[in-house]
Length: 450
Image (tube, rainbow, N blue to C red; front, side, top):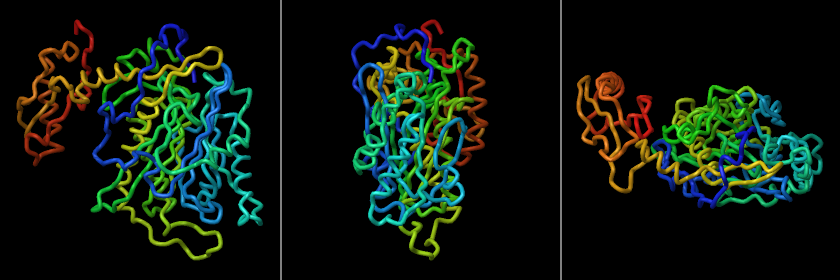
C-alpha cells in the first residue's frame, strides 16, 4: 500500500482522541446496531488479536474469528465466499467454494504470514483430543499487505504467536484500529485497521443479527455519510490525475449471522457486503484483493461431521432481502470504525500512517449537512411534492461560506427533485420526502470564494 511521497507534509503533532463513527454522528442506514455494534453481537462468535510491535520496523499482527466456541471441525458452519477483486492470497477458498462450509477458525494476517497462520490453525485443530483421527484440514486464512509500515520480509510472526489470537478469542467488545491484523494497514491514505459493526432486524422481519469485521488496507476516494472527505482533505486516489498506486491494497470482510442461511444464500449475503465497501469510496483497483467471507452460526444449519442427516430448515429466498440491507450498512460502518479508531503509527523506513483527523472530519460532515451542527445551524434540504416545486422549510444557513450554490442551480434542483420525488415518494407527505442535497450528487463548492 503506497502512501504520499512526502510524509513530512503531514506532521504527526498531538494525537487526536479516537472515537467510533457513531461518536461523530455517523450512523449509516436505517437498522439499529446490536448492543456492542460489533461482530460479536452474533451470539457465539469469538474474536482474538495478537499485535506485534518491535523496534522501528515491525508493525504487524493477526486476528482470529471463531464462529463458535465448540469443535469447529466436528461442528462446521455453512459459509460462502465472494471475491470482488482476486489480487490476494486467500487460503482455503476452493474447499469452501466446493462444500459451502468452514471447519476452522478464520485468521487474518499479513501477506507473507499466511503459511504460518495456517500452521497455527493446524496446530490448534490437531491439539483437540476429539480430532485424534483427523488427517485433512482446510485452514481459512485471509491477508492484506502491510509492507508500508511493517518490514514484511522479516517474517517475524510465528505460528505460536498467531495461535495466541485463536486461544485468546472471546466474546464482548472487539478491539479496533491499529490492533491485530490491522496493526500495519493503510486505508484511503490514512491509518486503517480492524473495524466492526452489526445490525439487528426487527422481530417482524425475523429478529436476526448480522455482524461484520473488516481488515482495511485499500484505497479510493473516502466518502463518509455521502460527504467526500478524501477530496476535502486532499488525500485521494487519482489526485492530480496521477495513478500513484495509492488505491492498491486489500480488504478482508468477515460477515457473521445467526439467521439460518444455506451456503448459497451466504454467498449472496457476502456479495452485498461489497455494496457497503463501495459506499465508502473504494476504488477496488487492479492490485487490491477484496474478499468477503460469510457464515451462519444457526444451530439448525450446522453440519456435524458424525451426523449424516441433512441440515434443518433455512430461510427462504424472499426472507433474505432484509439481511442484505443489514450487511450493507454494517460493512460501511465497520470500515469507518477501522479508520476512526486507528491511531497514527510510525514504522518501517520511517514511514508514517497518519490517523484520520477526526476534528476535521466532524467539521466537514457538519458543513456538508451529514450531521447536525451543535450550534444550531440548519442543513440544506431539498423538498418536493407530487410533481410540484416547494421550498424547503429548512433553508441554507446564512453563516456557512462552504455551501454557496449558484442561484441558477436551484431551478435544475427543483426539476430533479420533482421527478425523483414523483417516482419514489408519490404518496408521501412533505416531511417524508426531505432529502439532503448530497443525494442529488451536486458538487458543493467548499472554498471561501465559492
